[in-house]
Length: 347
Image (cartoon, rainbow, N blue to C red; front, side, top):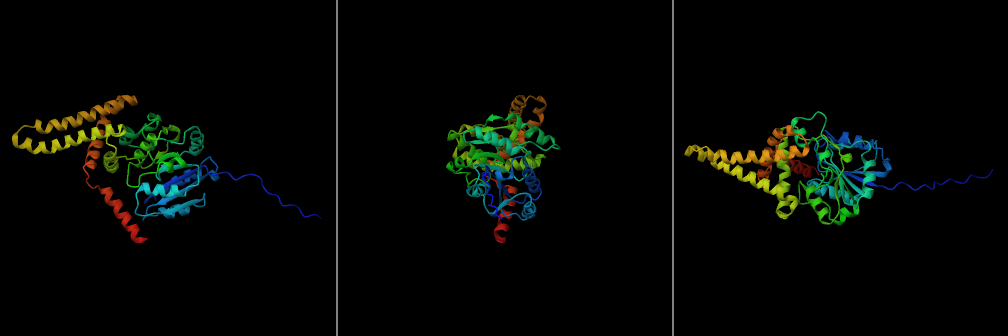
């Protein structure tokens, strides 16, 4: 009886199209949901890889990731005491996919997220595509007023897309030097400015939006987030102060800063002199400028009901960014520094 010849498959293995990169730091609350959403993608698992960069988590983040390894292969890099830009760049240096996908641990992509992206990246020029976030269904007025319909409103060519949902050709990313490791935040804005300066597209598609579970839901968390992002804007603006992409942020922040200083100085002077207008004038200018920006935003979004809540939020936004511009240390800065210090000691 003749020995049967071995049968060899002539099918070529599917190439890795996407390298999904997720930075983590104490993300046990959300990372499991994020990984489950990725495991349920309609795009075949062999067409994308997942790289998680952990920045020294002290909670159960790594345990949750280990529990998800049964769903698909996950590469974990431990890189403590580094900026989020350095974390993303470290993962990008190991990526095998034709396109890099930057996703945040508290974001939930839809099942066809990568499948839709595959069609869009093939049409593009290798530059950035992505989307602004969708808020959770049970969001408060803070989240609804500020973030509610950003994914729908900000479409087509934009100044930036958030790095929590950002796609780019791997070769273009490395050609442009990746994210700036000196930036602790606002690295997405700065990177997209370089992408545009290099004559690549920066496009936002609502179908690529992810649900951002970490959306600020209170005035306090909104203020903290804007303070945190303001520290990065301070660095970026210092380098690109004449860049049109930063001009509106700079002018509004400077106006609010002047109003705050005027109000702080004017309050005791008003008490001593008996002239309340010395205090009221700068405070009024601050509120009126916030009202003007709120009105403009509400009209653009087609809802005059947003004017009042946006006036409140623009005021908080301006105060937060102004304080950050002045260089004061934030509570969040200290928390991150302590977490990184502990991680470095543990290593």
